Image (cartoon, rainbow, N blue to C red; front, side, top):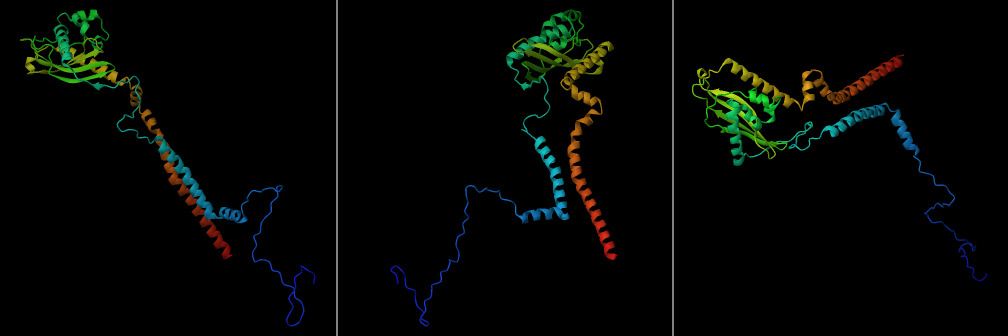
Length: 326
């Protein structure tokens, strides 16, 4: 036996030498060696996944479910988009109507004592000249653009003015019963007043109430921009003014009403034109056709698909029974 070698154990029974049996461990980690030259291939879907997708596409029930889901999604998506696109309530305190060109917001303002004194003097001069027809040309400098519209200073001197004549007694000229409104709009202060006038004795007229509107541009003078008798007070027998004057009052009142309506309708010419015809208002509501059509399609399309599916099932069932019977 050479040095460095190990002695083999001997069998006790036979006296022969037995080599020991080398065994491999039960589980060894298996490693995969990769080399720099090897190509890295992407992970491919397993055959089971592909077979499942193919089986779903071959299944009649799954195809029907996919069709129903696609139709529902195709109908719901536009409706949801329309809801988010056009449902904007905004601030409830703000107006959400159409924008009017050159629109100025009016603001209520007080009618101060200094302004009342100025208006009192203007009204007194206006009644003493234009209303009682005592040299009406002097009132040209204290009337506003509404009363001057279409007239000249010469017309006012002749008395051809849009002011109803009234034989007012020199009593309380420039006073008013109450203030109807006071507001500013586009740097113009407008005040509405109700004036009460007494007639001259034995004039055949009764007491009269008139609506008056005075205006002031910025810091300029006060001007009488509107004058219209509203009602006469007293028994009808005391109001014996001539039929010609009554007709003139009605004519001027009709003219003033027409001017007011024309000014009010000027910013809304498009809306008034649509109101004149019966076809355009219907066109304004045509946008409802889109959501109504989509809702109708959401109901009718599933019913149509269900009817087709039911017909095919019945047809396949009849063919199956025929083939089985033969």
